[in-house]
Length: 115
Length: 113
Image 1 (cartoon, one colour):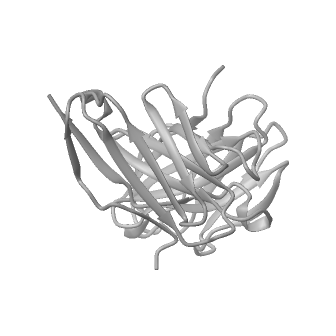
Image 2 (spheres, each protein chain N blue to C red; image 1 turned 45 degrees about the vertical axis):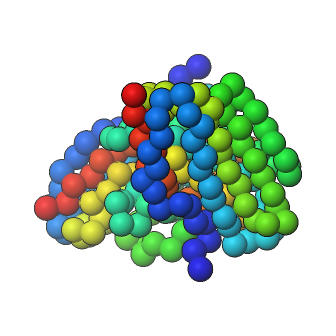
Image 3 (cartoon, rainbow over the protein chains, first blue to last red; image 1 turned 90 degrees about the horizontal axis):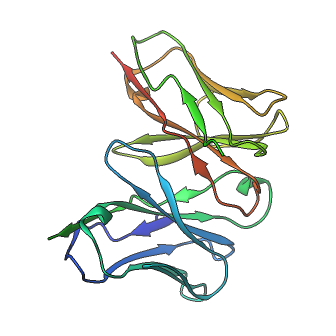
């Protein structure tokens, strides 16, 4: 089992729709969770982070965390063509030496928003 | 506030050579991490430095090494390059290396011929 798994995608949604991106993780002691966006040929850009169970909203983006189910998701409302990118879920493990500077990334989900 | 700066952005080497990549973190960030990104393996953690000390290391051979200087700038070195080392090497800095988010530089794209 991979440590962090994402929908393989690609995911295609029409402009204005809600895009839903999902991620599961295997380490129950994981403490913090991140969503990065990566445009083709560019480096990952942080979109959201979430530490506690529940929802966290930032503009058109909502991150949802359910630690009991070991599940984290990202919702993008009113999707725009400029949202087309690869979305990477990243997890930081339990506190301790092995978590210093280390995020474990999923393989990413390619999102395409078509006009 | 300037972001994470990596140099060089692109480089081409041949098998057996070595390469050194440089990273300047965001001002005030003392933790620097390095990642390798390839199409097949995705983003994989190489190592993390804080106050000139390597505190965490990923599953890479000893050919991959790094260091951090007193001004928090970091370098990584890959010796005896192999074709499989072709990748985007990303540096990230963090204010809180235990729980905080990572901010990535633009990366150094290495091609090994």
